[in-house]
Amino acid sequence: MPDYAHYAYEVEGLHKQFGEAPRPANTEISFRIRQGEFFGLLGSNGAGKTTLIKQMIGLVRPDEGTVRLLGRDVFAHPRFTAATVGYMPQTAFALNSLTVKEAVYFSAHLRGVAAKTARRERDALLDLLGLTHLAGKVARQLSGGERRLLQIAVTLIGSPPVLILDEPTNELDPSRRRQVWQLFRDLNQRDGHTIILITHNAIEAEQVIERVGILKEGRLVALGAPAELKSSLRSQVRLSITLGDTQVHGLPDYVRVQSEHRGKVVALVDSADLPHLTKDVDLSQFPEFTMHTATLEDVYVNYA
Ligand SMILES: Nc1ncnc2c1ncn2[C@@H]1O[C@H](COP(=O)(O)OP(=O)(O)OP(=O)(O)O)[C@@H](O)[C@H]1O
Image 1: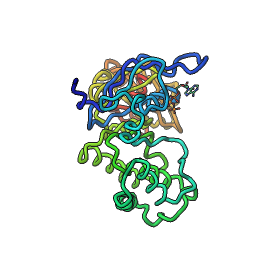
Image 2: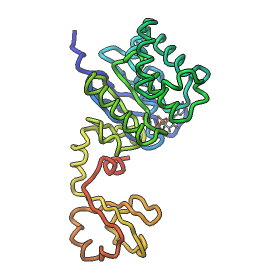
Image 3: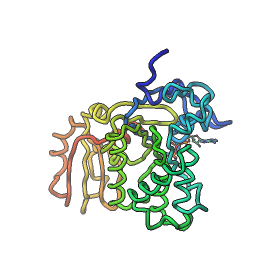
Image 4: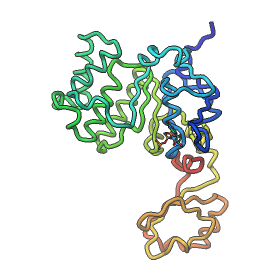
């Protein structure tokens, strides 16, 4: 028998075309995720992230290709897949008519956790996520952030070894975000969970992920450690400028503006053009001007 234990996921040659859509939702997608890895999946709207994730949990069958989870085909082993993967979708919470404690307990039950253990795990998770005082409240009546925390509890109950989290910190306030990121880091580093994070927020993702895949128009256009991908942009520098009285069109052509909002501009410049920039533009005219090497967000913008 081949030794599959090393990989949480082995994705080979996926291709999916929805009906008459102008292009496939995904094509030629192959990659592997090691057990215990913290993997990020980035891509703009419609890039094919959700389709890929649904293929990885056996909800969408690809036209071509295979997905193996811990060595087993996800479509041939739906029960194994459901017991192994905790999936937190971005969409509305399905258990809205249950109370917080019922939703978490019921989810534990579905994963086959024995009643006594389920109650103990539920209480510990509600405590960890600061939801104990809401235990008797119906999910529908929670705030957006509280519902997100409940979704996290429902995903984590029963301790599935592989977690797939779609924008998990959306709607959380900054202190809860920090707490939840720490929780995910602990689950990965201390408890060895494999975590796959889908996000648009490359800056937050960069703090936690070991490797990233970037999807564009259904294709995996970049795959590697953030540092590796950033080094491919080493020849570029990111500028953050507060314009003051200057207009954005007053900047030289080689300053490639990525975004402009209320007089604040983010732009990329080739390192080779920096000497020109200091000659062509009086940098002291800007109320604020900073320059730094590429971030994962720059990599994302560059590819996506
Ligand atoms: N059930 C479906 N039927 C037809 N087309 C679909 C279906 N699901 C997805 N698509 C199409 O496949 C493409 C990829 O969609 P997908 O939802 O995977 O993207 P995404 O990267 O998750 O986007 P977002 O960040 O906006 O959630 C899109 O063009 C979408 O319109």
